Length: 368
Ligand code: KQY
Image (tube, rainbow, N blue to C red; front, side, top):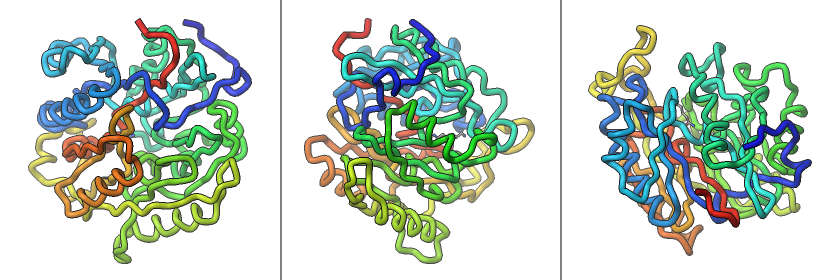
């Protein structure tokens, strides 16, 4: 494996869309006691259901810490590859490589990771094990790795259509805890050089009370070139209403890299989902402080789905809108099965299905 100091787009590489064909998917077995209640037992069951759904149509690689390897191996089906790798938490979208392709081979981008804001407003310290995972995963997969550790970026903060357009939020990418010395234009240039995109659509804010500083993958996602789903509520008293309306306005007045107008499908949110006192009791304190407080609103959104080769796997919250989200995805992905997974136990950790997965694009040689 080579560590490269060139820029992917100069080498002819770009980030394909998630709905392009995959080789497989990476996840990290949950373990962190201040993220996942009761020693992560409930989260592990939810991860297992998700992994089984993904592995129906693509390979799955699960990273487990030394202490958790036997448990992951025992709980997961034999076709899932479990490898031992240290991590601080379990957000593969943000700490695994962002893969780029030139149509023949793939390489990984090793962004800097500082736990969503470092010492400014990050969510835990230290984060050094997470920060090392992307390079280790490239090495394990025998794929060259672009050294972008000087630029802080999480995979959940960008979505591409594979045809030159990228979606992101100002709330996240311009936040003080990431790349405070860079201008918006410098950040744009870096994204274009790394991900091979030509047009960036900046939404202002992400989901209300999202602790990632508004990752795009919880509020808006491409479902095909020129089409997106946007998390939506009609409830004017919900702080989410103004945020989603502002996003809609930006999207409806944008064109993509190919000059197409963006078609927006509203994806209705569940009613506000809040953590209970009992769930909080199951979480360890972090540095003597509770990670969550009873009745705190969690950033629940159906947009946090994962697109595998054969399915779209969508969070479910036991809400009236669960079915509506599944039906919308069936309409938008007629060639894929749509699978709903109860994901409250993932949401308690602060993210959802998309946040705990990272796709590896298809390439023409088999990974050993
Ligand atoms: O949503 C994500 N991509 C990560 C959420 C991290 C939460 C840490 N508690």
